[in-house]
Length: 114
Image (cartoon, rainbow, N blue to C red):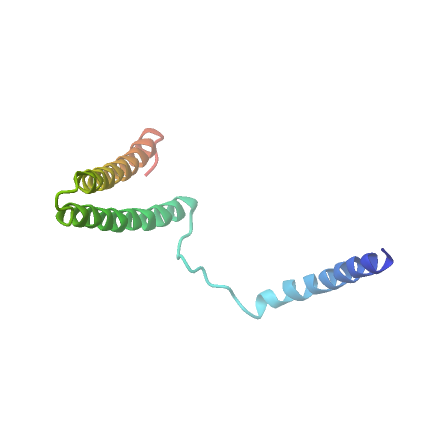
């Protein structure tokens, strides 16, 4: 147990000793903003834009997968139904994503935003 407390004490001493160095090092190097946003609204727009693009790409892949299932089904009606379901749910997902973007704009306009 004593060894455990020595490790905790040493860790606290080291961490408290490095804090002033980090504060002084602020003038030495600067961390750039990788997203290039200045407000929380811009951050939300950047993140939502990324997810809209991702949703569109995934929906396209799912539609192609559904079409592939239908084309290769032959006489298997289960594969045809699975392909139709894949296409339907991919389109439904895209509709939900587009409605969500419109809902965001509606809320901003109701609250008197930009």
